[in-house]
Image 1 (tube, rainbow, N blue to C red):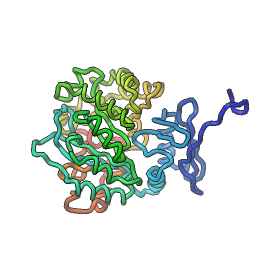
Image 2: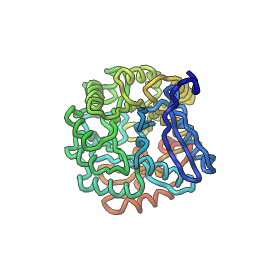
Image 3: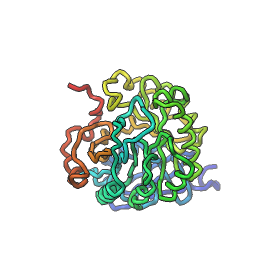
Image 4: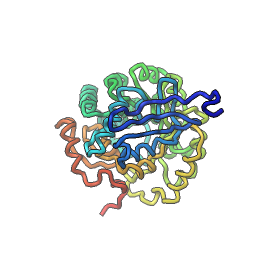
Length: 374
């Protein structure tokens, strides 16, 4: 029924309510609709951010809460309010490290062919006190998403304590291959405040996924991790690194995500870094990217977040609103761009972040990690 004939009006969620920008979201026909007004709503960066969310399937829409994506804090929340303010500041050139990835350990039972941070066998890791100190520093800088990564974070015994150190100024998530992600760990992480789990997947076919992960049983571990995370009440994102060889699987991967009742499917384009250095001929073509766009635009739930599409809309995130910290404390602009800007063991995160402002590629439409080396 149409409005005015007894149909219930859609729930509205406030995104921004300042004098220069008013923005609301609603969910109509299962998809997000963004309405914005005010002088700032016409600025290019905010219009790009609106286009990324508008028309997309939300992860969750309840009467009192909206989750656009596992990559964004829920609405309403203190963390989302901080993110909205960060977007406003970005329109005036004021940078905030909205997302910070912390690789807490390099230990990992897998030997992924495309790993950007290969395990050296030296058991490098950041100590709990170091991680908690870094978390406090990035929260003070305005971070709204703290991502715990590895290696394999489940090998880090104090992981729930690290999650607990992230207060309501941000949400916390983690990457896992599924190895060691037990039902008990899932419950402990949920109790500690973890928001979502990114489960890495390379193929919808078990043998191919295991081949890419360099370990038999990796696919079964990933499937069990999804089950355990959902049972604990966590959001689950299936995180897929697309290459020219597996881009044709996007339909099967999305069907698997739906079958597993995953909250979201994220697709990322492979980067020739780490063990994958030099594999330039596996990067996606323009035709591949167009096929992804076409599939995403018409796909039913669950939501698909296309990182290549966001990259084209907003430009490179590296050093602009994202930074990565390694198990040795080195700070990169991006997990796939091993350009050391500083080290958290020898300097403050704030000063390192300020140095990143001088990087020449911030906001570039061309990924610096994919450019041929001269």
